[in-house]
Image 1 (cartoon, helix red, strand yellow):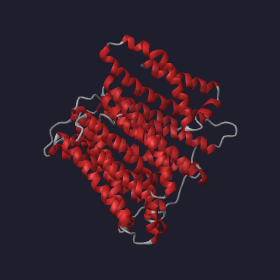
Image 2: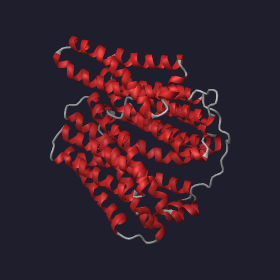
Image 3: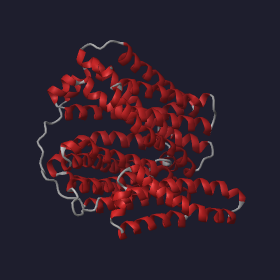
Image 4: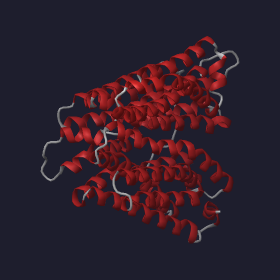
Length: 501
């Protein structure tokens, strides 16, 4: 399997270095790049895997091929990222902004991959470090590292935006990698829950700074007519890293343990820091921006449609992501006998569905203008799918829930963002669109913080099965309320009414 994981990237990277036009042609579109890598992998597998299978004990064949299939997909995506990086090398006739954004994508991908490696086992690692604390059960403490991480990301985000404006995006990106490297090393060596929370806080600081710094870099290095395509690079790096991280981290944890996997995360974050040093400096190091005021949030919350979007769609989406997928899924699957590698394979379903379905949904939603319809359907699908545990017990029911959540968030992620300026036209004109989005992002992260803590409290009080059902029912209720507000109740003004065409 190690030969398989190394041979294909080596061959394709060699081709890219020897033939500079190859990565540009292969990486011209995601489909073309994936087809090139997939063809090479299939050819290699046809020649090698039958012989390897004959050398394995019969009981190990199934697990081997599961892990091999996951590694094939992960290698495919990693090599595609490599092709894009080679294509981003400055060359004759190349646009410097496109090359810079391509290199930024590589740095962001490495950093996000470092964070995603622990996605399939972080609550299990927290349980190993748990010691009794008065008033806090083991179940609640297992969810605390995720909740604290999300809370600190929300707290640090406004500061990260200020630093990006003051010091420039490249310096901010480099600043973001340093506490993350220290955080991953500290997490790998933590001897208590308090130490784990401290070092996860350092990782949260790095995550917030890196996230905002990367967005700022794209904004400053792409012209207005290419801004959407530049932001697509940013989104793709985050999604692909999430798709690769959970299964790859699960396999590493199975083979080498949790602590060694966090050490690998530290090395990836260090590689991201090295990649950041290769980025060009910002053209404008200082950007004037009106500072965030609490009155901004108050004014937006007085907008009933913005409040409905936030409470019935955006916050529940984040709550389901961190509470259901990040907390309940790993803990429930582990209780059902799954290893970290198996948990990672199942969680990979979520990212694959978003990658395959998300672009199509965004295109159709933009073409029809019915963003509210797709956002409402997403909430209903996510809630209904996670309730499948009532009919299908164990791993099968949880897998259905993971897949349904992937479909839901493919419907939600882009359409929610599109709805913000539609329902806040007057607020955007008064405060500026950037300020509106800053308030929206800050408030929606409340769902990310509440999710694991609520899930842990429900599991502790009523059991894991009841917690899965409760979050599914909450998703259904919120999706229904959103549909009532946006699709059935007439809007208060013509401007707002355009959101539900």
